Length: 422
Image 1 (tube, rainbow, N blue to C red):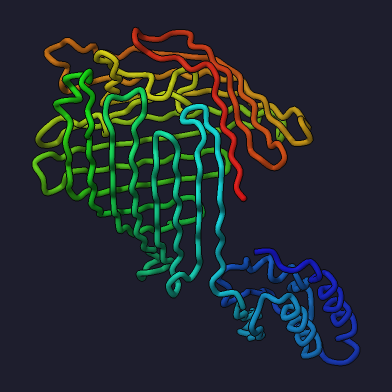
Image 2 (image 1 turned 90 degrees about the horizontal axis):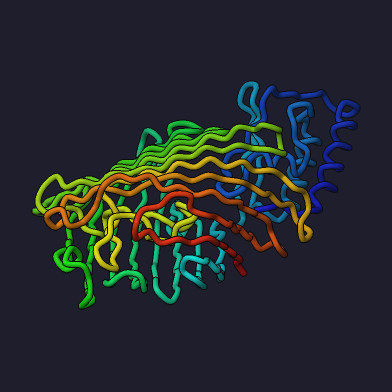
C-alpha cells in the first residue's frame, strides 16, 4: 500500500529539524532504527517516507518532527518512538486494519477460449487472518477457490491455512465430465528467504460422470466417484536465478484405493548478457501409482500439452484409445529457451525468445491386454515466443512446430494468453 506522495515534503521538514537540532539540544544517535507494529506497510517504506535513518539525531524536536511527518501520511492512528539500547523502535498503529480489493478480470487463452474471473481478498477478515476468493468460468470449465491463511498461528514460526476448491470441466476433446471438490487444512513454515515447506491433510471428492457412448472401455471402467482423505507434502526453494519445487500426494487414505502422486519442477536461468539476453532451462516431471486397490484414474494421470508442452494441443500427448487421450502415469517435459530484450514494441518493453521443448507421457497399469500402446516415446517441438504489455495488458504468444511426435498426438502451432483486471 503506497504512502501518500506528499511525504517527501514531510521528509524535508524532518531534515530541517535534523540540521537545527544540534543548535538547540544534545544529539542522540542509534545504530539501528526498526519499525514495530506494522502489518501491511513495509518497514523500509515507512522510514523512507519521512527520511528516517540512523544518521539522524533523535533529539526531542527531531522525534516530534518525525512523528508529525508520519501522522500526516494518513496511514497511522498513532506513532511512538521507543529507544532500547542502541536501537530506536518506531512503533506504529496502522489506520486501515482491514485492507482488501475486489477485481473483475477477463482472459483469453487459445487453449480454453475466453475466461472470466472474479477475485476478492481481505486482510484481517478474521483477526490476524487473510481471506481470498476467486471464481473462474469459461465455456468448458468453471471453478471456485477460497482460502484462509494465518501467519504465526503456532509457535516455531508455523503458519496455518485452509484451502477450498470446487471445479467442473466438460472439454469437447474428452468423452466425460469431471467434477472435483477438495477441502484442505494445512500448516506451512518459511524456513528462510528461499525455502518453504507445507503439510496438508484434506478430503477430496473426485467424480467421473456423463461418459459418452463412444468412450474408451478404459474410461467406462473408471467412471464413478472416489471420496476419501488425502495428505500433501510440499517443498519449495526459490533463489535469484534458479528454483525447485516438489509435491507429494497420497490420495484415498482410509479407502480401498490409495494412490501416490509425485510432482517435481526445476528451473535455472543464465544471464548471458545482463538485462539483455537470458538462457533458461526448465524441467517438469511426475509419476502416479496405485499403492492399494484399483489403478490410477484418468483424472490423476498426466495429460500434457498446450503451454506446458508447446507445439501440442492441451491433453494432446499420451496413450490413446479411440478418440480418447488416456494420458500417462509418468511424464517429463524439458525446455530450453533463449530470451532477448528487444526494447519498445507498441509502446512497451518486449522480449522475444526461441525455444526447444521435448517430453513424453507414458505408462498405464491397464493396457486392455496390450491393446493400448503406452510405451515411452520422445516428442519434440521448436518455436518462437513474444511477451509484452499492450495498454498495461499482459500478452504472451508463441508459434511452435513439432519435430517428432507419436501416432494420435494432436498439434497446436499457435498459443496466446491475454489477461487484464479491472
